[in-house]
Image (tube, rainbow over all chains, first blue to last red; front, top):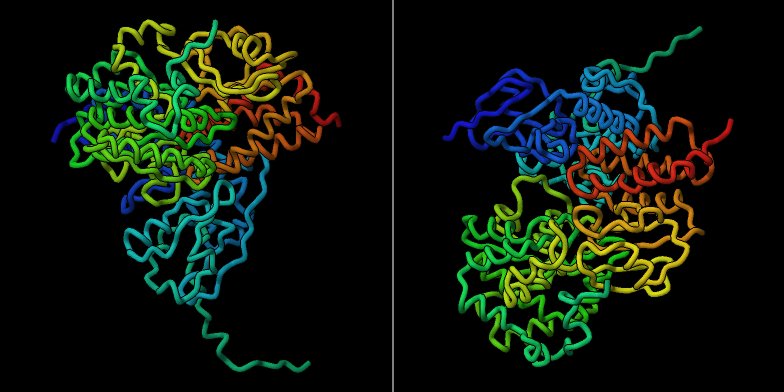
Length: 225
Length: 398
């Protein structure tokens, strides 16, 4: 396989044909934040958090899907890149509910982690939030689409790994939404307990239902007073 | 400068329902010349030498695109004609399709020969559903034996703006949700159904037969340094004579807007549709060319009675509605901009809003996945540059 030499942040690095910018960066310990990208899934370039500057390119390019080319000169943390990434995180946070402190995924949330890493605080602009009813009728999965950031990892993992194609994207623009069937609440008829998508969700949008604890199975106690 | 007709040369002259009238106007001579006298490579070289660039707005060199597709390995290849014409204020392709469908078919057959494709698609805008004459024209051409090795199918869109973007268009033909794909891979190497594909605007293709017949040198003499040939413009808005005009590239915006379309008291002109650049009247002498401004040829004129913030707000509202929702900057960014502009329209803008608009615009232009998100903030940026006071006057005082 042909060897390709690229320059990332001033250092000459080697990669082979077909590798993406992100793969070469990761192999060399350069940290590029990602949200919609997962090694197990095909890239789609939707979140745009992983954008980098390639000299000669009019726009920034998504590093998760752009293959390296001979002699490419790449900057992964230039001021332009950082400013753009920061604005994208702010945009995602602006429409995200402010319920982190009571969210079960609070400390595991990838959006929150990226925001913390990039020192993004409250966005300087407001936008309406998407509030959807919580779907908790399925015994296997709870969906709270208000917390969905439309990274489509659930759509792709369900299709590519579980091979079920339970999810799809419907509607356009700001109103686009990950749906089941013709936008029905998820229930046990369409989805079994494979648990693939819940593990891929970066936020609290998909989770497993909480197990009812033993304590609730006991008899009611009446305390006379 | 008077109009110069290359693309529109048959419009209104031939009968679009009768192929014999087209044959009398040198119809299919270019096609015969291509297959009888030229190799595939010579055809692409001729187009390359002509300097023809894509008329859909991006201005990519047409010959280079064809050459890449010709060289690409693939058991099957496709030619797509983009007749989605979704850009706000463009109607030139409809005008052409209604009057001269045969030149387009001939051009697609030449393209098929040049890259080695056996199948072509015309992706027709849903609203142009009434154009039965296109199906009829393909049938007549087939009967005359010009489509023996290459067949053309019509695919109708479902009314999405973003499906005019080449990769979303291909998704739509494949029967998927129309959303932009990332590039590379580019369509000439992996396009429709992952096969090498060329995708050209109606108007780009309309130039092909004349270039093959008259030679690249003839075409190369017309236009400016980097913009060869003519351009068909759709002029609308505050003008006395709206319509379709074909001018040599490099003509001044003033000639088109004031001399031909008879506009008066012009405040600004938006060139290129909803995502087009805004040209204030002081710059009306700007030449129309790829080097300066062009887009897909939509020219919308606004006179002094129009309110710039309202115009930009409506453009953004449209773009937010039409964003496919795949990539974050466009999906979220257009919505935030709409909400801010709506505040300005009510006279309730905030001091910090202008800076926020500029930040959002820059992030969207740099990081969006496709041309829609990358170009969406252009009217905002331009209006802030030329008509900043219109915004400042609407900032809430206390």
